[in-house]
Image 1 (tube, rainbow, N blue to C red):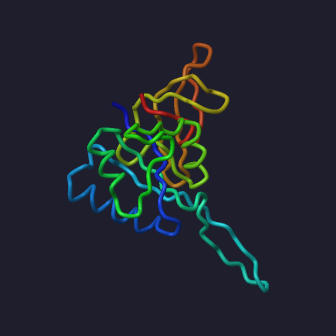
Image 2 (cartoon, rainbow, N blue to C red):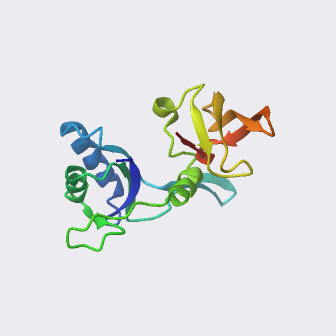
Length: 177
């Protein structure tokens, strides 16, 4: 089974508490191999008030938390029964498992936050083969030549018309094989 992203509904204003409690449960119950990342989708907006610039963190989807997980019965139970969680989005109820977000949906959300589905530190290294899933080279695959962690960019060598060509892509535009 693959890890996928799911949307979890929380009580409004309880997103941080749910994230903390869920991360504590993952640690205490040894679920690191099934539940990977818990993210509160946020953006930073610059506000000018009385001539003073002020950065303000704003929730993209108040009352929702994103969870990257492998949907097993145990992982599903743990997330569902975390205090503050009201349920999963995309589940019909009656014990039905929820549907995950589509790759392009989660890519768009994470890109707005300067993140990616691919966890660079753990999942990606120079020499790995990746598929390009967005942009002008969509559908092609190539080898990672350089990783720019600071800017969330990769330099990939692809085969373009029989020649090795270096292309620069953003992290959210690739998926690992």
